[in-house]
Length: 467
Image (cartoon, rainbow, N blue to C red; front, top):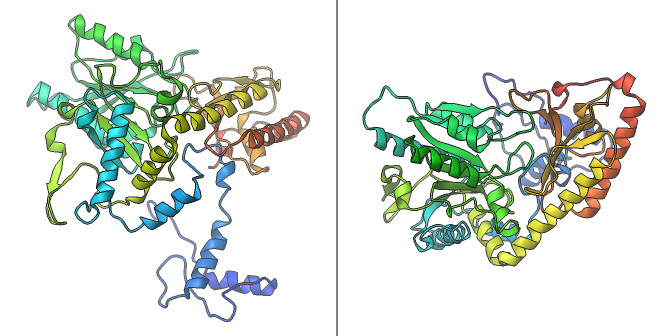
């Protein structure tokens, strides 16, 4: 995005057309005068075929989505799903009077997730679709804050706080800043790289609106111990402390654990869990952007957060930070649930985990690397260099892998563990064992080159990675 006066290049599209003509390349712009500036809307229209080809060619400069192991977001769907999304591209999710079946499909998905996450009465599901997990987290945070305000009354001198691990996704920092809530970040400590039960309880007081437990850390793919955190908060309340609800940020794990970790208790089976979010466009296997926010029951969602409008035809309840938004992704989510079923979803997620654990094992055996996680929770793992590696670091590895087309993020952990710099690999649907073998081959080549030329390459630091 352009912020604070970022300058947009003023190069014109006809310059590229002229360059291609000089090189003797086929170009649909030949024979047309195309003079379209990039920093403002052109005065005259451009033929549709020309506009398509020029923009299409420019997008070739983007990286290959299938080789992007940085993103959690779905990069492949079946052609039938893509066709359904194209068919529904013009459907506005908010316009339930005109698109009642799309609204019914949204409600089906909410009911399915309510069953999947063991809501007390899934027949009366409370939730909504969103543009992604970030919006879902904002809504859940607003509900926590409003319920806290109802408990403490009209005392405006008290400032609410939200307890979470320092590894929480940036959307939680955004929520706290946008809604004037103190972000109580529990620092990581030694080998504990996420929120622990004792630490969560110790940071709570009468102004705590909730604790965020993350089912699948963005940093290393590990689950936070939701049940243990709930037990610690139960004990806190039983001993006269505050009665603090939990929100489970299941952006990724809420679409993994129900299928692969069926004995893990993390969802609405825990009475202290008030709400859960997930990203349909991550391990929900849908193109961006769709997310889901669910509450354990209607009491957990304050009525004043739901609005009713009647100017679209009929009375429409609406809950969300957006109003108009596409319905195609919601329809695609229903397609994935309907198409795969429980066993199909289990098979897809198990395949992702199998690839992750096999690849992490292979990397751990290369010699210079140490695993931080193995991919046996989220199909995501992180690794770093051993202490005896000198002259190069994970940032140099990330740069080297880009030369082979792979996008592998390198970053440091949060405060108190900024000494730990890692690489992270996300094994999504479509990242096969064959691709994993190719990745390992290229990683070995990069590693060999770095070990051979360590003195010349040197340490690069985090500023070398631009994603």
